Image (cartoon, rainbow, N blue to C red):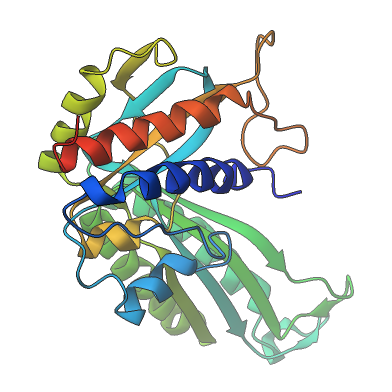
Amino acid sequence: MHACGHDGHTAYMLVLADCLIQLKDSIPGTIKIIHQNGEEMPPGGAKSMVDSGLLDDLDAVYGIHLFPTHPAGYVGYRSGYAFAGRTYFKLVVQGVGGHGSSPHLSNDAIVAASHFVTAVQTVISRRLNPFDVGVITIGSFDGKGSFNVIKDSVELEGDVRYMTVEIQELIDKEVHRIAKGIEVEFGVNCELTYTVDYPPLKNDPKVTAEVVASLESMNDPDIHEVSEYPMLSGSEDFAYYLEKIPGCFFVIGCKPKGVKEAYFNHHPKFDIDEDALLVAAKSVAQVVCSYYEIS
């Protein structure tokens, strides 16, 4: 089970597409329905869609994501940066192996790699403006060997999160600088793989304002609240669409009825209130109809 709500996204879009087809004679333009293709496998399907050229003629793009932070009936928006970008990195530190009894004849990759782990955290604490947001996580440190043998190589893997392109560029520069510094300081070789998986998601302020005005004008009993949500540290490949096309990505509450604390997306017990599918379909339909000035 994927446990993120994308099956719900597909379901609501099929209903929405069917309704829009019924209105096609009233629509003075073209609407393209884009399903999420491999969103969880970096860099996600959105990038390949953008690169294909199939979306070059679009003037606006809209998307939603189901979140169980609010009950069905909630629609959340955020202008500007809304979701974090994410970078994957792998560092292979190659030294010279040896025996614990003769450390002077070797070059310990574990010691060098350990310094890297500590040093990259100073990027967040000493290079970022205190009011900016960034996270560097070392999720894997593969240095297993024998207790009395000095390892010749170590492999680290990690993940970087950032809320703006400027922070992304700063962290990128600093991580590469530290890797080069480790080479000089310890006389090892550092092979750094640094891959941007998803850019920060930035909603177009003008389009977002239009979406909010449209949703707030609805008089629908299924939609109870339209309000701003905080920045989210998760990443989303919809960001690739927004780099090319003005648009807005907003969220739909799907918290199951009768629960105090819902399991969040990706938890094995994640579930949705299926009433949220109707809210999603109505919300996006409202935005599309407002765009075309269809009442």
